[in-house]
Structures are given as structure tokens and as C-alpha cells.
Image (cartoon, rainbow, N blue to C red):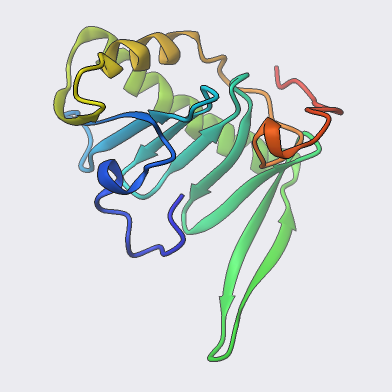
Length: 175
């Protein structure tokens, strides 16, 4: 996710941590979609600047951005962070999401990903760019979307596995 909320328009160029990525449009969406993969295979999915979903290589949700809120995984649960800006600082106000909030969040995620998956698998998209140019990123994206469990499990941490030291302990599956 970008650090500045206003600067989300050129994700294909800016998302250099995603070593394979594609930007495409779908007629049912107003914004372009960017999907990409980090070196370890961790995918990220941007519907314009909002919503954004980021996963581990094991397809666990680790971070998201929705309705202006940062959402992160913490011990298999979702935590919502709200930016509180003052003239001198920006504070993140923490809110542990309750079951109903998580259910609403995941219902929306499932709807978004299912619609996207269906359109991509049917070939109903217009590719506007990809990196690298000599790689069939759309086939990888279609494959990933078709195997992503819905709803996904929540990771134990918002960090990638290499940043977690001993790995993903205490994970909870969402069914």
C-alpha cells in the first residue's frame, strides 16, 4: 500500500516490490485493477486505491485498506487503524474488529474477488500494462484468483513470513 492516500494512481510503475504485476480494466469497475506478486509469491490486489488486499504466499490476508482505514492481521484477527491527523503528528487509533465487522469486511472481499475472478477467467478485461513485459502475468493472476480460498484465513501478522522470524504461529482458519 502506498504511504500517501492521495498518491495511488500509478501503481503499476510505483509498486516495485511486486516483481510481477499487471494493470487492467474491467467494464464493471470504474477504476483500474493492479494485481502483483512479490519475490516470495505474496500477492497484492488493488481495486484502484481502495479497496486493497495483501496476502501472504500461503494466501492468508495480512493487510488491507478499505473505506480510508488501514486493516491489519494480528494473531489471526483483524485490527482497524484510523489515521488521526493533527498539525504536528499523525496517530493511528486502534480498533479490534468484532465478529460482525469481520464478517462484513469478508463478505465484501469475497464479492470483490469473486467478481474479479469471474471476469479475468472469462478474459473480460483490457490489459493496460504489465511488468515484466515478457511474462504472462495475467495467466498467473487468473490461476491465483481461481485457487484463492474465499474467505481467506487471517495471517498471524501483517508482516511477510521472512519478517516474522519463526513463521506463522497461532494462525486461525476462517471457514
